[in-house]
Length: 612
Image (tube, rainbow, N blue to C red):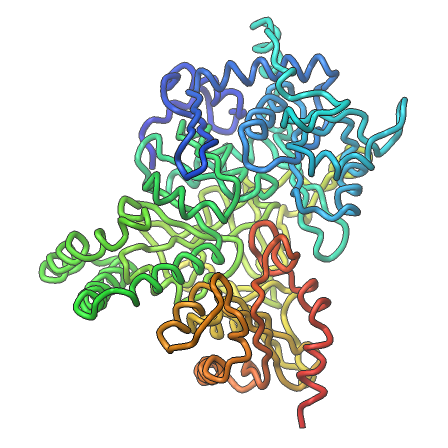
């Protein structure tokens, strides 16, 4: 837990502006926000201190107020992780307005729904692409329900006939600024986060100041972070995880946010900053593990042996910590030696040699990935939560963890399971409810305050939660057996060549799978096995007999660990990686099962039709 926190009042009575004022007063000279304009990571850095950030936020609030932004009004934000997004969000909060960040990849009908449902009249967008996406939603002259009336554009060269973001800041009488945010109450909304809408129109989840403050304090009580720790903000700010990690927790902790445009640039920035904490969704940890494995395979044989021995020692220490025991003196000494002489030098080129806290959430973490990183001395503290729980609701921590579980409930929250295994939750970080089109809020809990999450899991005798899958994603075979697709997919991805997987079989007599080669690993594997490749591409590897034979062995190995119902009978190997840009992954890198099944329906059906 950080040791610098001075809470200006009782935690349940705090708002985000209360904490920002505290930061300007107590930590005004400390860095708050950095972004980069250079051609290489970490170059061309601009930094605002907490005092400077608050001053800039006050000026932006004045400009937004001059545009007519009023208390309680919803304002659309469509930008990547850039300073205009972060600063505008907090400026709106100080006005008592409600920022609504949307994904830049949102489908036109989803974007139209959010505008109509939130009744946003103003949108602040990044550049020409975002402006073009919002242009069809602009109202003609005069009032038009469900349409945007004004656009503010951040990029100077894309402003056109609209308002430029840089023309917004203006002097704001201190009495007006201080008086405005002091009218906010802890129960007021600090944001509305729209869910992905995978089973229908997106829902607007209303999150309050009290939700984010209490969630942040509960998280801070478990994580062991140095004061003013760096945070690399790379997930979309439309996702509750990055809103907590990249906005609200840094305000609570007075920490330093480094804005990163997206997951593709994060590895390079990690190498530059060598942070003390790092959060990655499972796909990010998988990709980083693949890169490190490739690096390990290129080492001379003696060094690979040293790494393997050091990894055994590191895993033994992790097992002791899981049991709540200290390693014996001999193991402790071996671990210190392995860490200082082998593991830390190995991790330094990756930028992970100074890590003290690592975490993941959003989807089940493959056990082999957890085990791989544990062997390098990095224990990934898995968490679980939803937008409706203000992000993480359960968490593993250094004092108590079980690898493979998603931890125990945070302070102030409760969990239990229904008869069918669905996880029910209640507590102080649970959302206020779902936004209705008329601006009112529909409660999302039952009469006793319990919220049905849609996730399936179990709680062990020590209170740790173990996830099975999403209730709506469970496969029910034609014989009536329930199968967790995530369980099978993670087993298939244990082989380094398999980067992504989707298992299907609902209403069928057996399971089939779509497998995607991991491009980086595939290229290294091909080189070691004497397979020529065109530069920069796997180039037909999916059809190569040696690759097919290796993947056949991977599927057989996975099947050997699964029961008969869970085993994959047939599969198709693909080369083109699934990404948010191509639509198969969400912006937070979760699999869009419905999209993949629809896009590859002919191939999936063929895996059944061709089977004799």
